[in-house]
Length: 222
Image (cartoon, rainbow, N blue to C red; front, side, top):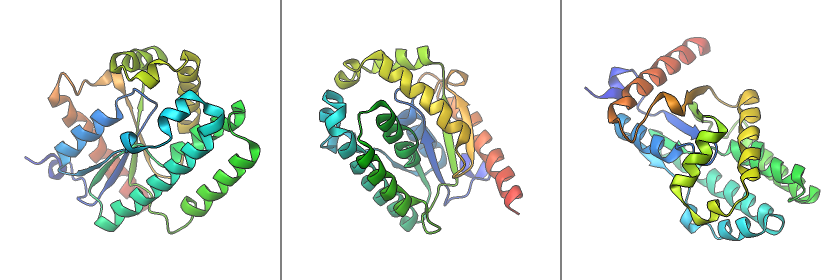
């Protein structure tokens, strides 16, 4: 039986997967999309003209990188909703301002002027009644040690060269961010409670949780 229908998940739902680097967002995105018959929306990392430069020089490229991400995610969000929904999205537009840009400003790798400009852009684009927010944000969480292990296994060169203190900073900021996030409903999943790589069947309990959560959300709205 189709899992989407079995657990009463709307065919036009838009679900965003959030979490720090290495937590398994891409795997979750693919598996959920397959289980629900949805399309996927991924970060275009390979096409990003600033990412490699950014990892080599945070001070010079943080503003450029954040503006690029903001523009790309905004265009993608519009495309998803114009298409009619039915998408699983890898990473949210909210993480850019709530975590990354803020972190660079507070650590001194983004100037106050650049940060103010970035926030103004974000507010004009996203914090309006016209911006289409997701139906659900799934937050993937885990211990710092588990996440660092996953980053090491993945083995991306630019991530391996990044100081461990950066990943620790990001982990802490993600936890602080999600605790105050309220732009859309949030379902938290611990990465140690499932294994989508070794056990394909572990996706069904997750789909069931999503269906129950969305049902409760709909009741609250009514």
